[in-house]
Image (cartoon, rainbow, N blue to C red; front, side, top):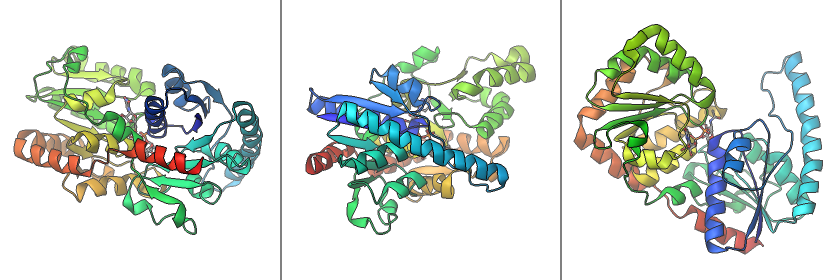
Length: 372
Ligand SMILES: CC(=O)N[C@H]1[C@@H](OP(=O)(O)OP(=O)(O)OC[C@H]2O[C@@H](n3ccc(=O)[nH]c3=O)[C@H](O)[C@@H]2O)O[C@H](CO)[C@@H](O)[C@@H]1O
C-alpha cells in the first residue's frame, strides 16, 4: 500500500500520523510512505528523525484579525494555498498514493484538497473535541472523517455520514507501555514519586513563568520533578532560573529539559502529569491511565483545549486549573494536594484508563481498506 501522510505545525498533529504509519507497516510490511509538511513546522524535525521520506510545501494559516495587515497577510495565505495545491499535485502524481491521510494543521488543506480533486481516496483525522478550521474546510471534499471525541461527531454539518469515531492512533501505539527505569536518564531515582510538567509539544510561556516562580517551593517537596520547557524556550528559562536562584537552582530533585523524545515511556514512569490539554497528549494519558492536572491553553480555536480537558475532568480522570486562575500558589497547592493523596491518584488513574480508546489505528486501516 502507498500512503501519503500530511499534518503538522505541532506534535499533536504529527505523532498520530506516525503512529498510524507504524501500524500500517506492521500489518502491511511492503507499504511505502511519503509525508508532506512544511519547513517551519515541528514535522521538519520529527518526521526525518523517524526516517520517513519527507517533502515540504510552503503554506501559512489565516490571521483572524482583519486590519489592513491581516488582510494583506491573508491574501498571501490564499496565494500560498493555491501554489501549495500545485506543488501537492506534483508530489501526488510522482508518488501515486493509494490513499492520503491528513491529521490536521493548515498544511493538510492544499494536500488533501489536491488529493481529493485527483480522485485519490482521502481521510482526515480530527484529534480535538472541537473540529479545526482546516478539517471543517476539507470535510466536503474528502471521503472519510475520523474523530477522537464523541462531541466531534456532529460538527461536520452536511457531511455527518462521512464521520467515524476511531480515537487517536497514538493511543494504540502507546497502549501497553510499562513502567521502566527511564527516569535514570535524567539522573533521577526511578523508584521515587515524580511529577512531569510540560506545556504541549512547543512549550507554554505562561506555565514556564509559573514554574520559574514556583521553583523554590517545588524543590522543597518530597517528590521529584521533570520539567519540559519546549525546545525554543529552554535557554531562556535556564538563564532566568540562574538569575533568580543562583547556585541554589541546582537541586537533587528537579530536572529542566528542552524536549523529551520518549514521552510515552516517561508518562508511564511518573505519578502524575501536569500540563496543557492538547488532544494527542490526552489520548496518550488515557491510553496509559495516568492522572493529570490540566491547564488548557486559552489561545486555541474555540477554546478547544478547555473542552478537551473537561471531557476528562467530567469523568474524574483529571483536575483542571484555568489559566486565568494559574499562580505560583494554585500551581504548587494543586500538585501537592494530588501528590499527598494516593487513593485519589489511583481512582483518577482508573478513570483515565476507562476513557482510553486503544484500537484507533486498526479502525483507520479498516476505513482505508473500505475506500481503496
Ligand atoms: C497550541 C496548539 O495549537 N496546540 C494544539 C496542538 O498541541 P500540541 O502539539 O501541543 O499537541 P498535543 O498536546 O496534543 O500533543 C503533543 C505531542 O507531543 C509529544 N511531546 C510533547 C513534548 C515533548 O517534550 N515530547 C513529546 O514527545 C506528546 O507526547 C504528544 O504526542 O495540537 C493538538 C492536537 O491537535 C491540539 O489539541 C492543541 O490544542
